[in-house]
Length: 107
Image (cartoon, rainbow, N blue to C red; front, side):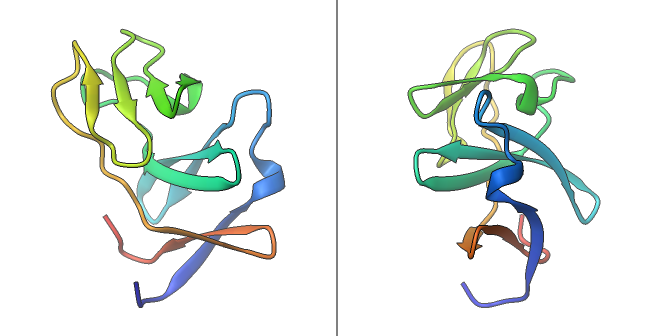
């Protein structure tokens, strides 16, 4: 991954109790996830309904939509349970010195 990386948040800013945080990347709402020592990022809005995934629940590496309980694999964005049928957009992430970076223009 070569490109320009934008600092978006600090790892310490992501609440440990939820493991999720909504940020704005350019014009996109993005959800950051803490999965152990790894940070992942996907679109924040569930493609099935108008719900913020940052308000969802992390279960075994998946995010559960708080509106209708559809689940997605956080690392890949792949749909895991109905009623969802459209995968999530994922974003390249890197972490350096406790700062989370997203690649500029990545979708």
